[in-house]
Length: 113
Ligand code: AMP
Ligand code: ZN
Image 1 (cartoon, rainbow, N blue to C red):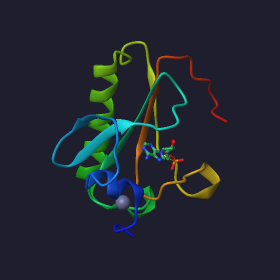
Image 2 (image 1 turned 135 degrees about the vertical axis):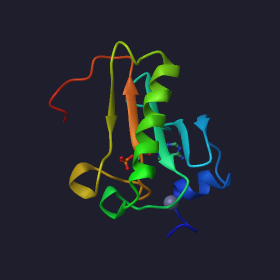
Image 3 (image 1 turned 45 degrees about the horizontal axis):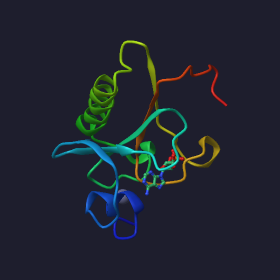
């Protein structure tokens, strides 16, 4: 529900966030519980619960383009970084407003846990 959704509340400015980048479509802010020295979340301003409900190619493209821009600005683009979208329970999604994690500035193992 957009009214009670944590990330919609960040979009509306009702909850503080450490915003690193924004435009009219998307917002990028630091994860409150970082799993790497660089850990930023990129979200659409529009409420979409999970990747399964996403239907607009343009919004998905904008999320990924902002993820790359965040990585460049954070200085991890050349060394390497990871972009992750967790979908539903088995993948560990905890906030049901679609978001891409941008993780970097440390070695990231593959396969992921
Ligand atoms: P996921 O598990 O993929 O749904 O990721 C949700 C992420 O949101 C987690 O990494 C949390 O640490 C992060 N998170 C939860 N609340 C906040 C908040 N208020 N500000 C920033 N990040 C948050
Ligand atoms: Zn939302």
